[in-house]
Amino acid sequence: MDYKSIQVDCYSGYRANERPIAFSYQEHRHEITETVDCWHEGSIDPTRPEIRYFKVKTGQGGIFILRYLSLFDAWSIKPL
Image 1 (cartoon, rainbow, N blue to C red):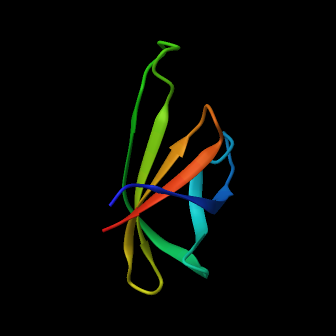
Image 2 (image 1 turned 180 degrees about the horizontal axis):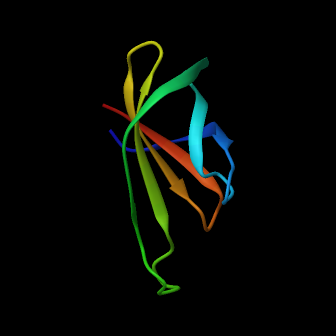
């Protein structure tokens, strides 16, 4: 399954959209209870914008990969 665009509520500390705390998917709001893993790709090379990934677990027990493309301020999701 490919990534689908979603709306994400985030904690913003030292940077905007530092980490996701909840998201809306398939007409339901999902609260994130655990960030299982996080990583990023990209570099200081402007032709490769930064993309951040978060593997998260929800209160309903679902596990998802959330992807944040900072260049477009856009979130997407991939259920596991």
